[in-house]
Image 1 (cartoon, rainbow, N blue to C red):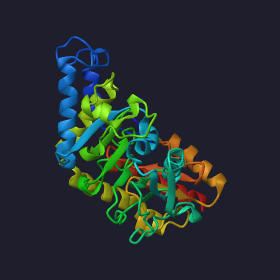
Image 2: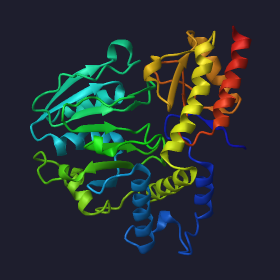
Image 3: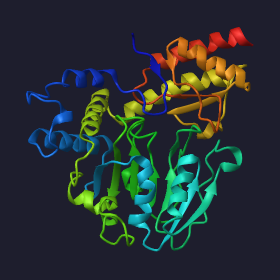
Image 4: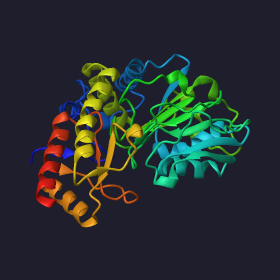
Length: 360
């Protein structure tokens, strides 16, 4: 069986050379005589793995010294609670709602204090990013929260919101490492790794040191305090050791590819092939306002549920997997993360052209 082109939104495609390397090391990691899966997280070999992973991530993202990098568990969804538990000192936070995940984060924050919806694009099925240049930021807000790339709806902030001096917290799960970022613009920048970096089970939190304190909401469990993990260098308890090892390999792959500015160019080139086709197609159309389009997730529809289903089925038979759209949007969605080769996008567009000719 040859490998398919996997357009899944997550768990998603990983670089083939990373998978091959991991396969080669599966039974014996660098002469230890055991797999990384079997190794103590307190061992010298594993200590090198996690420290190198952090150093490579710091280099890739140019992370300043006053930010901690934490490798945690519980996915981005657990951060929906950890963020208010650790940061809601005044019990007030502002949320910009641009999709399911921002909405879920907002709903979770409501359990811990007063969460305000200060902007939303729900009125048009989250098909755009609201204007965030002059928002009604709450005077006593502890932070402003965004989901930067919306996996389900295919939108992306091209400019960060004007938070009027408040801390910005951003979920970057589906655009993590897809382009350069200025970490200093954020108080917290975090994401689940299963879309662009590694296997499911790891969430990476990059947090400014002054935000890591013992002053958390009463009743916050030890495991949900950033300080617990920061003080122990992500080794307070057994971390998702194998997942972190794969992330580390992906960081090395990204460095070898030329870093994040090169990835951004590659991602723009890939997305352009697909968007250019959608813009002139007589059958398919994109569902997002042009100015807010994501480079990572591209939703599109034919306008007919039967044709959408036929497309997904025939695409699968042609080796183009996981193109069914999220139930809230319908249609199709192609997730074209860093590890998706340009040939995959070209194969998809060639198939779409053929399908259009046969079904118009």
